[in-house]
Picture: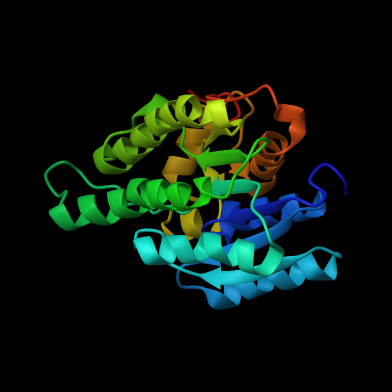
Length: 248
C-alpha cells in the first residue's frame, strides 16, 4: 500500500464496472479517491464503503461529466476533501450500437457529449490542479482497432479519445503531466450484461477472436490503470495500451 501513498485520484463513472474496480485498485495502493457517479449514488456509496473497510480513503461525488459545472464540481471535490489532485481517470462512458440507417442525432450527441466532451471538460478542470508527476488515464476501447459493424458513433467517440490522448500528452508534457489511454476489449460488467452482450453470440465471437480465449474481467483492466497512475510509469506518456487479451 505504497505506490500511490499521499496521492489523490478522481475516477469518473466509478459506481460500477471498470470504474469501480479502478477506484478500489488505486485506493489499495494508497490513493485517496473521488468516486464519481452520474446516477447510481448507491453504487458509488458501496464502492466507497468497500474502500474504507479496507483502510482506504474515498468519497462519493455526483456529477454529469457532460455538464461543465458538474465536471468542475467533481474535480473541486478532490481539492475540498483531500487538498490536492494527482491522478485523473476519465472512465465515464456510454455505448449503444446502431446501424447507420437507425443512427439518430440524439444518439450521436448523447454519446459524444459524455464520451468526448465530458472527458475534455473534466480534464480541463483537472489540469488546473495537476502538477509535475500528475497522470491522466483515459479509458478508450479496442473498438478503434476492431471497428465492428453498427458501431459508427461509439467507435467514433473512442477514436476521438485516442487522438485526444496523443494531443494532451504533447500539450501537458512540458508541465510534467503524463497522459495515456487504456483500451479494453469486451469486458464483463453490469453494463455488458444489461446490454445482452454477456452470454450472447457476440461474446462467443469475441472470445473466439481473442488469443487468450475469453472476454475480459474488470480485474484485468484496473492494475494497468494503477501502473500508469504510479511513478513506475514515469517515462510513459502518449501511449494507447490495448488491453484485449490479444484481440485486434
